[in-house]
Amino acid sequence: MIALPNLRHLKAFQAVARLGSVGQASASINISQPAVTQAIAKLEYQIGAPVFDRRPTGSYPTEFGKILLRRVDRFFSMIEDGFSSLYPSAPENDQGHTPIGLVTSTQIRSLVATADATTAAQSASAMGISETALYRSARELEHILNCRLFQASADGIVNTPAGAELTRKVGLAIREIECALEEVDIAKGRAAARLSIGVLPMSATSAFSSAVGDLTRRHPNIQIRIKEGNYLAMLNCLRLGQVDMNFGLLRRPDWANDVVEEPLCGDTFCVITRRGHPLKDIANPTFRDFMKYEWIMPAPGTARRRILEEFFDVGPRTSYAIETSSPAVIRSLLSTSDRISILSRQEIDNDDRRDRFSIFPLRSQRPSVKGITTRANWIPTPIHLEFLELLRTHLARS
Image (cartoon, rainbow, N blue to C red; front, side, top):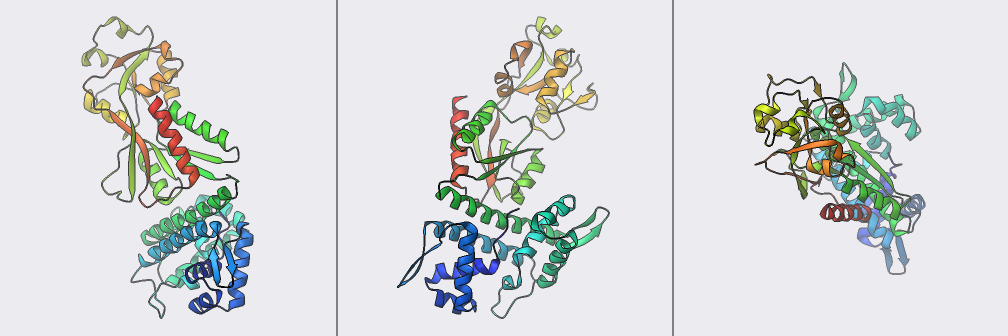
């Protein structure tokens, strides 16, 4: 997690950018002019770039200031939205706003850090405070908002439903500041950005790998984090801001109206066996032929599992002892037995060892659609846009 700038410094910056004057900003946020000037200076030192062009007629955002302002506006909007979701529990100040002025950056970061008890100690260390201080800071936020954000459980201290939703929105807000700092670095000619990608099981195609490879060659200092998991797990990571995008089969549930999908390519599934399997002597294998052999079954809930259940009417009576969604494990098991399984056409075509296997297409099959899933209100950085363009290009070629 980043060292989130002081919220008072961000508020001062926002006010000066909006009003074009340190004096007017001072009056609007009820902070002295020297304090506003000092806040701006500390913010500029932290990001390593000037945010205002100071002239006799006023203070005007520089290129870096404009980048920062867009993200800071979104940051506070998301924080306010998170606080407003707690109503009527959260108190209001005399102006009818939630008490953002009473909240510190440490409390904001502590809320997100305590959401995962398994990493709380590590997060506290990264923040330079003890784990006890981390939880105390989160509890202080709970007191300020006058809303119960945590509760005891068998697994320790966890979020209440209200706390979980606030944590999600605060996490997305913090990601806005991370993107602002990354975009400022890019504008300074240092593309030391972070790209977090969620990949669904069995979706890492050669096109995806080529896009990642091209991006790292263009920007050697970039940091790419690729996280794999099942659809619902990765959807949750996306909604929490833990990944910037998901790549894989598109299957957005109706309730997930805060994410959008971009179809990029179609794919179909094939039955696959080892080369020399008895099925190779059958010109057009039927359902009965396939059912004579033990299946390596995909994990429940995956698209290929649904294909089997629908196409072959695979049910509890079907013989299988192995369940996995790992292409490497499937290939290894097939090569040493008469078991059968299914892989996507892209996975088979991208495999240099495909001549070791026999392939049986599944006809009359609706193609599965792969693509990118992102948050509905997401604003990508230039690095995000570059990666997406590379991915589209490589998928079109393949």
